[in-house]
Amino acid sequence: MRDANARSLRERAERVIPGGVDSPVRAYRAVPGVPPHIVAGNGAHVVDADGNEFIDYVLAYGPHILGHQPPQVVAAVRAQLERGIAYGHTVALEVELAERIVDAVDSVEMVRFVTSGTEAAMSAVRLARAATGRDRIVKFAGGYHGHADALLAEAGSGIATLGIPGSPGVPAAAVATTTVVPYNDLEAVAALFEREGDQIAAVIVEPVAGNMGCVPPEPGFLDGLRHITSKWGALLVFDEVVTGFRVAYGGAQSLYRVRPDLSLFGKVIGGGLPVGAYGGRRDLMEQIAPSGPVYQAGTLSGSPPAMAAGRAALDVLRENPGLYERLEGLGQRLQSGFEAAAGAVGMTCTVGRVGSMVTPFIGIATARTFDEVQRSDRERFGRLHADWLDAGILWPPSQFETAFLSTAHTDEDVDRTVESFAATLSTVSV
Image (spheres, rainbow, N blue to C red):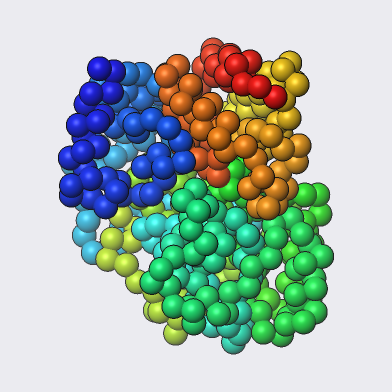
């Protein structure tokens, strides 16, 4: 049986881990089939417990921009492990990785490392409230900024996949100061600020939405957010946990030429190890303890192995700018292939893409907001996902998760993926 070990591991996992997983989307509740249990990865490919090999477009949800096991990152982590894992003291690696981020991202003058994107988001929100003396936070429908209580309102990612509007256990008071508006709807933001602008501490946004599938910002949307927040004295927070160092070396903010007050990072800056960070203007960041009164701490923040991995990954990207051109080429090849395949059978399909972030939305002509994305044909996506799995292609198991390319993917990997996509569409009635 092809997935015998996967089924056995799933049964064992469900006895000792809620749902058998440590993150909900891994449970494959939105798609058919048994989730594979991965045992190894190399380059753009992974192998499961049954010996099946897959072209990997999950890439741990983004950090493996260089593919699995890039030699520079592996060597850096191995060298650090031989020196130690954690000390409870600052290490040079923290300083060196912080310097690289500050050098790469114009808006970031200081940075603080944490251990996850959730921590980065909740810390930035706390800082924004302290710096402005206001309580209200604005986020966008479908935007996911981790699982902190105040930011779970109308979130994307696993929340959307499971059809959960928020989460039990989150008190009404925790989200009472969070206002949700449609992504890419600048008029809604402007109207909100006209009513409540003097109460709003910050707007937090994924500059490229990645947790409702890949949804790029409409022209002028990010510039408009910058103008409105500046006018009303609120902070603009870019959640670049996914986009930072992936869509461009300086992040989405360098791609779209918009300067936020605070930025969140993760994924790529850990080289595949757990990490998060937030940073921004010096006058804001110096309000963080011990420099200032805004408290935030973490025993394993600045984990030496994660700092070593992140430093190595950023050095490869900085020293080889052509890698971003390669990622753009692969992304365009995948997008064009999907569009051509859908057009050949007369099926409506729009492809959201920015660089190496890609999502095909079957059954809809536009995907600009969470409302539009939710109208996509999730049943057909589920069938597509199952066919991809059978064909040895590992795609995120949700319409609301973007897929990722790495520098290790090849044209042949992409073409094989497009061929499988076309084969599935040709058997589905329009």
